[in-house]
Figure 1 (cartoon, rainbow, N blue to C red):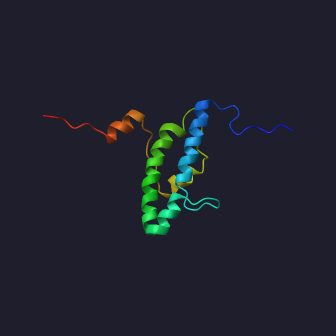
Figure 2 (figure 1 turned 180 degrees about the vertical axis):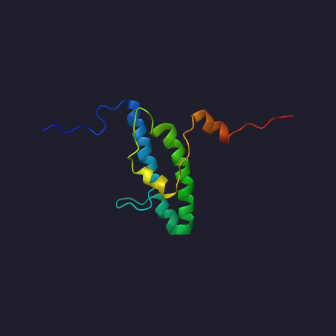
Figure 3 (figure 1 turned 30 degrees about the vertical axis):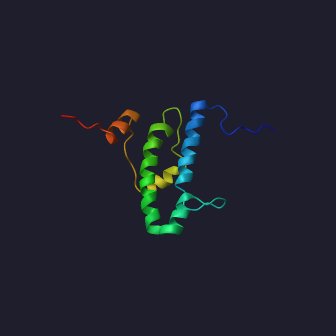
Length: 112
């Protein structure tokens, strides 16, 4: 019997994209049966309200990375569990290029 490999028929770039999105999803995990996540620690230390606020900020950051690196024409990740987190916070930003992401946040100051 043949067992298909997890990333069989995927390019190296697609494998890297998949691993990155899985890591983002783990960072957004509040409860995990096998490990203590950073959000679990934050909730224990500072309460559920602060954890939820931080999770929302993190989800917005993760969504930008997801649009730039994860869900592309070559790799459909529309069924990835991270989508549920984006839906939880009603995050529906339009895709941005990496250049636009960087220049939007880091506009240089003009020197007179």
